[in-house]
Structures are given as structure tokens and as C-alpha cells.
Length: 431
Ligand code: SAJ
Image 1 (spheres, rainbow, N blue to C red):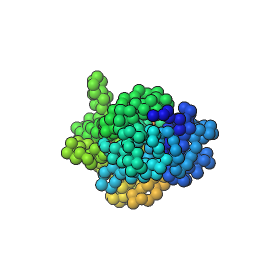
Image 2 (cartoon, rainbow, N blue to C red; image 1 turned 45 degrees about the horizontal axis):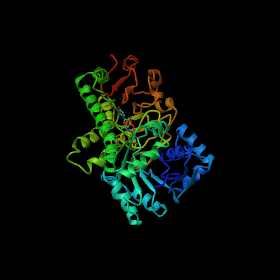
Image 3 (cartoon, rainbow, N blue to C red; image 1 turned 45 degrees about the vertical axis):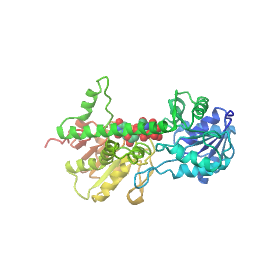
Image 4 (cartoon, rainbow, N blue to C red; image 1 turned 90 degrees about the horizontal axis):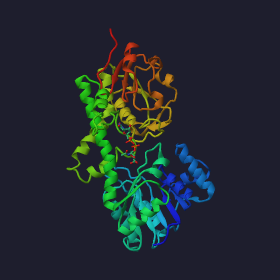
């Protein structure tokens, strides 16, 4: 099998685009391929949808260097990397249609001797079922004519470049030769350690990682509920418990967002429903958090028909990404129960609200809070950490739910607010 000099990266999203740029920076001749002509046109015009500064810089440099070209269709290359989304269907099973479409579109350009890599999160067996079978249909023997490997991405949005370069990787080959070849390839542009495995083990490892996180966040959320009922502060308990050398309880919150953690566990639950019961329960706990937070605000005195200000649309602090955000679940609950709402976020401008409606978002905190009955903190943006009570003077109902534990409870109570901190009893001002 020949050396890799040319690479086609298919899917120019938050993983594919920086990967293509890093490969170009490492000296490969790279084709950045996306079936969406708008993405290609934007990139050619020097625009980049991804907000991370490091990403936009390496992408611009790669295009300017002439080593990253852009196209809606792949042409011949030594290696192909598929980085397209794998969402879930309405029935919570893996939707592999974009992977299937990507390999089908690229297949005519894939010749004998190519290295073909899937990075998209996929159910166990998908590399064989989707990638290998598409290449068989093209007349290539998936074990002898080409090298096929599954190499899941592990990047943490917000630190994409560093994580692509430095994280350890698991590389699953359809054959041992494919695994070793893919390992050599990743070594040529990444610094992290590499573990090789079968494709199925690598697929499972990726699902295990994100499921581990989901289940552990659900456990933290269950502890938060117990603390509320037991009248103690879960944050105090977690920091005490985490002094144990083998305990690391995660942080409770308003639910789990993003395009990975709330989605990936379903790839296991759907296929292994009985063994997946713990994971199903965790999904239910995490998905129920936003509505519970609203319930606590009602317990604290929120009246039907009130106006609620939501602080934070992004699914995680300091990101501009509202995909699968717990705020979406909160909006549905607010609409169902007949409340009006406004949203503030310093980083997100728009999000899709209930019924597919476009929900507009303000970046003016005092205007958002002016005249509302209550406020709910949904995102741990740095801008929300330790906000003082005077910033909430516009909240006429003097009710606040803190889903991220960013506010100083005592200071708010002393300023005359009733506050429902997630994982601690509701605190009210003295009459
Ligand atoms: N969250 C909590 N409590 C915590 C940690 C997170 O409520 O203690 C919430 C966050 O606020 C957020 C959600 O969980 O809403 C998901 O956040 P995350 O920190 O798990 O990060 P993601 O979804 O942006 O990225 C994850 C990462 N996976 C793991 O850490 C195992 C990342 O490394 C993966 O590459 C990414 O999923 C992916 O693409 O699969």
C-alpha cells in the first residue's frame, strides 16, 4: 500500500474543516469536500461558520497556502476521511443516511490502494455495514483492495485544534493492515497516543465515552434532587465526596445539550434495550432537568402567565452553539404551561424554539430582565458567574432559578430575592 500524500476530507463541519486545515498545515494536498455548495462558496469567499478563532486562522492559512482546495465532490486521493453528522431519528435510532450518502458520492473516486476512514460517531458494526459494503458495491474488496478504518473524533468544542492534535485516539481497522496504516497516517499530523483495535471495538469505545459522561451527569442530577428534598446543598456534598481518591462526581445542571452526549447513548440503547436500561433512565433524568427547574420556580411562587427571562441559550458555557440545548426543552415547557419568555445570551444570536419557530435572543442583559417576573440561569457562561443582585433589579417578581449554581445565594436573599438553586433548598428573604 502506498504512502498517503493526498487526502479528501468529506464533511466540512466542526471536525472535518479543522482536520482538513491541520492536514494541509502538515504538508498534505487536501481536498475539503462538502455537498452543500453554500459552505464551499463561503469558504472560498474567506468566511468560516465556525467561531473558534484558532480554527478560522488555520483554515484561512490552509486555503491561502494552496494546499487546501474546496469542492462539492471528491476526486481521486490516497486517503478519504468522512466527518459527516450522525443524528438520531424521531424513534431514537442512529440516522446513518449522511454517512451512506457521503461514501456513495465519494466511491467513484476511491481506487484500489486507498485508505478510507470514518470519524463520525456510529453504531457498532457501521463501518463494516455502511463503508465496506459501499466499497464492495464499487467492486473493491474491503479487506484486500482498500484499507478501511474507524477513527472517532474526540474533540471538545471550544478547544478543537488542541484536542485534534493532542488527544489520544482509538483506531479500529477492518483489518490489522488497515489499523496500522491509519495509525501511521494519524501519527503524521497528531501528537496524541494511538491505540489500535477492531473497527467494532473502536465504534463501541466512542459510544462508551459519551454514554459514560451522560450517565455520570444523570447521577449528579439525581444527587441534586435528593439534596433539594433532604435540605442540604449538593455542591457542598459533591466537593466533600470528591475528596475521596476514587470519586469524581460531575456537576448537576439544567440538562445535557450538544450534538453528542444527548444523542450517542441512543446508539447503544436502541440496539441493546435491556442492557441499556441504565442509560435510558439517565437520558430521561437529564432530559427532565429543564422542566424540573421550571417546577422549582413554580414552587418558589411563579404565577401562571408570568414572563420569564432565560439567561443562556448555548448548551455549554462560553460557546455559541445552541444545538440540543436544555434551553430548547425549557422553552417547550414554558409554552406548554402558558408562560411568556425572553432569552439573553452573549454568544448565541438565534435558536430554534418550540414548533420550529425562530427564537430571537438579546445580548442586552438589563433590557432582557427589565419587567420580567422571574429569571432562570441555564448556561454557565463566564459572563453569568457571580452576577450581583443589582443586575437583577428589573426582575419585578424577584424570583430566580439558578440551574448552574453561578449566583451567591445569600447575597440574593439579603437583596430580597427568592432563589431556587439547583441542588439546594429554595431560599427566601426574611419576611
Ligand atoms: N454537563 C453537565 N455537567 C457536567 C458536565 C457537562 O451538566 O459535569 C453538560 C454541559 O453543560 C452540556 C452537556 O453536558 O450541556 C455536554 O457537555 P460536555 O462537557 O460533555 O461536552 P460536549 O458535548 O461538548 O463534548 C463531548 C465530549 N465527550 C466527553 O467528554 C466524553 C467530547 O470530548 C466529544 O468529542 C464530544 O462530546 C463529541 O463530539 O462526541
